[in-house]
Structure formats: C-alpha cells, structure tokens
Image (cartoon, rainbow, N blue to C red; front, top):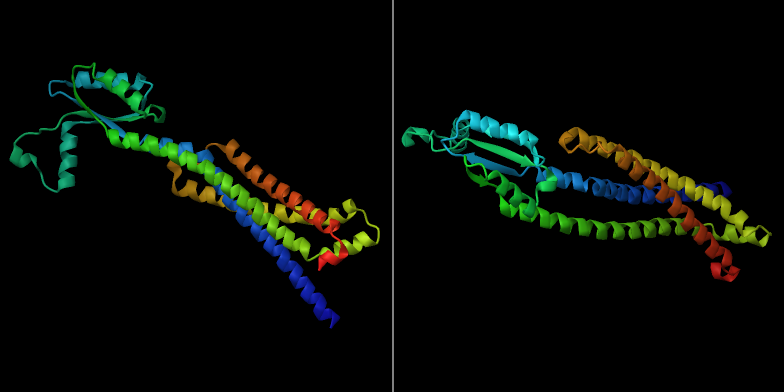
Amino acid sequence: MASNFDKFQKRRLISSYFSVVLSVFLVLFLLGVLGLFVINSKKLADDFKEKIAMTVFFDNEANDSIIKAFGTDLKKMPFAKKFVYVSKDEAAKLHTDIIGEDFLTFLGENPLQNSYDIHLKADYVERDSIVKIERTLRKNEMISDIVYDKQLVNLVNDNIKKVSFWILIISGFLTVIAVLLINSSLRLSIHSNRFIIKTMQMVGATKAFIRKPFVMRSVKLGMLGAGLAIIALIALLIYVNTNFPSLGILDDKILIAFVLISVLGIGILITWLSTHFATQRFLNLRTDDLY
C-alpha cells in the first residue's frame, strides 16, 4: 500500500516538475521570438523599403555615352543601394512576355524609353528624402520622367511607425503574462509541499534553510526550460536563415547572443523570485491556514 502511495507521489512530483519546465519553455520561447523580431524589425523594414524602385526614364535623344555617364554618377551617389539599366529593347521584351503578344508588330516602332531602376537605401525611402533626390536627378536635362510609387512609400513609413508602437505594447504585455504564468506554475508546485515546509519550520529549521532547496530546485527547472527555449530559438534562426538568406537574420550575432542570454537570465530570475515569495508565504502562514 505504501509502495503504491510512494509511486503516486513520485508521479505527481514528476508531473509538477514537467508542468513548470513546460511553462517556462513556452513562455520564454515566445519572449525570445518577440525579442528576435524586435532586433530584426528594422532590418525587415529596411529590406522591404529597399525593394521599392525609382525608375528614371531618358529622352530618346540621350545617347549611350550620356546614359553610361549617368550610371557612373549613380555609383557615387550616397542614396543608391543598387541600380539596373533597362534598355528600351529589354523593356519591350519584358512587356511582350507580360501581355503575351508582340505589341511592336502593330505599332511599327518601340515607344518605350531607356531607363534605370534605382533601389534606394532604406534611410532615404522617406517623403522628404525622395523629393530631394528626385529634384537632384531632374537637373539632368536628358531625363524625361521619374516614376515611383509615392503612395506605397507613404504607406510603408506610416505603418512601420504603427507596428513599432504596437510591438512595444505587445512586448510589455507578454512580459507580464510570462511572469504571471511561470509564477503560477511555481506557486502550485510549492503549494503541494506546504506541509513539508511547515513541518521543517516546526522542528526549528530557519526560513533561509527551508527556502534554499526549493529555490535551487526551481532555478534548475528554470534553467532547463530556458535551455530548451534557447535550443528552439537557435533552430528557428537556422530555419529562417536557410529559407530566407536575403534577410541576413544571423548577421548581428552580438544582439542574437544578448537575446539568448536574456532568455536564460529571465528564466533564472523569475523562477528564483517566484519560489522565494511562494515559500515565504507558506512560512508566514499559521498551521490551521494550510488547510
């Protein structure tokens, strides 16, 4: 009979440990994902901005030397991330592929113009900066027109500000939820040992002596949960970098290491504080209140 009771107690203890580790793992993994997203949010926003192209069209009178000189000047421009020259013949071929028929056969001539597709650096994809760039480029008399999606530029910048604000709000909210969930799991674990705590106190053990094994056990569980969260985060980073290498998500290794170390630190800190206050609560209770 006693053996069955011991097995039951052991299973309950293992179940309690498992729930604590699982809670710590899930919460810290979500916090880690959010942390990685925050440090990479600017990179993601910059990557999206730099996909917006500004197309510069040239007059038909512009010869190859003028167009080549413009490309040479672009290399010296601080705002140009990359640029591609598209000849009128290449543009005609591209249009033919899109519409599925050769429009030159019934027009008789190519109405398209030679152009450059310029991708600006992210810092220059702003309303005022693009207007200044456009004004500077239009000083070249051989440029007939400059086209870019003004509405998209405005929309991107406005939405990035809104997303940044909500990321801060969500980060704070999830942090509070993380503390509450981990604290709740640990309190339940300590609650199951409340009679042991009170018994030790009644035989003369000091509060610090009683707290120590519970705190050490919780910290170890917290480290285990945090370790699993770190492994899962590293796996996630490798997966994203393998499938989306253009994001360069592993480039900033210092910040990534900071996030991973913070996950471990938060796991240890929350479990230590939660266990400390949970045991203190039962130490301060009268024996009758334990029931």
